[in-house]
Image (cartoon, rainbow, N blue to C red; front, top):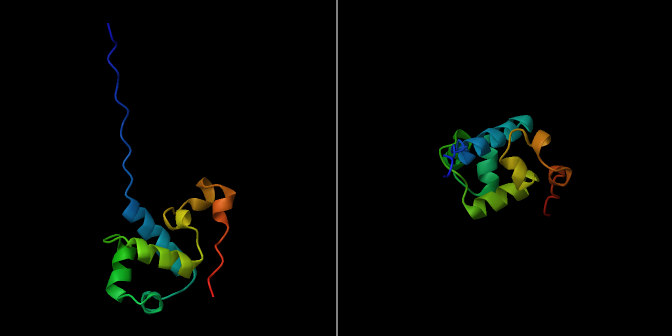
Length: 98
């Protein structure tokens, strides 16, 4: 007979919320207004604000532009505890493109 297996609890991660918190923390730490980010990336303030509020997630291209703009590795843009949970290689800021 087979013993009944207890199912593992499923972990649910809200990637959008995690990104929103990490993005906001980066923005506030660097004292950059939403408007400046929006203008610099060629996006609307509403779009950037929706990212920060966790209502929307950047498209692939917008996320790439944001990584270039911030100089922050993608893994750090998802995790508010990145300094505690990712390999050292991922902690090195990417060089900004000229």
